Length: 180
Image (cartoon, rainbow, N blue to C red; front, side, top):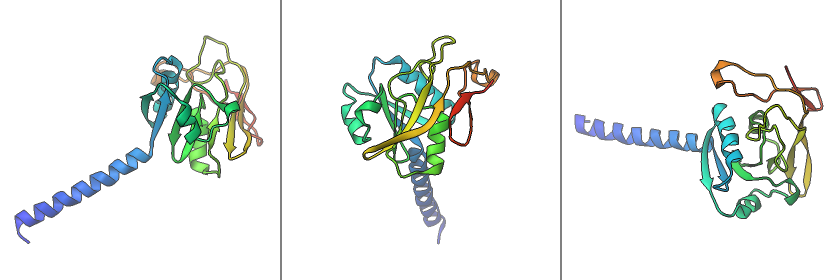
């Protein structure tokens, strides 16, 4: 093998390696579909990005096809729909629950936080924190996945510039309460 053949084969290897890395990166990118006029969706996307998950925002005029693709029941629908790791994520689901879903890999279609509860990621409004529930769902079924109570949030410090992080204290039944 001469120098030219070696460099050509090395270049082909580099392209294959780059393609594999790109595929891996894309499989870890959350695709978020939202209305272009919705500001809370951008806040939720920042919450997800701060945890290290890549986010691709897509502004769309009609979310219906994405909610149908994710099998999101009408009662669980919210203002944006996202996809990652073969699951749909509907509404303002805390990143903690998204990561748990991706690790546990249950036989489900996805997670949802129905409506737009105040105090969920992206829906922060001063000190107000309404209780909310994260729901896991599949074809024809839903069940609670995590519950969050209405209490104050703990500031987590300098690294995220004073933003608040959702940290429920969870017992064996996954009924969460804010710490701090």
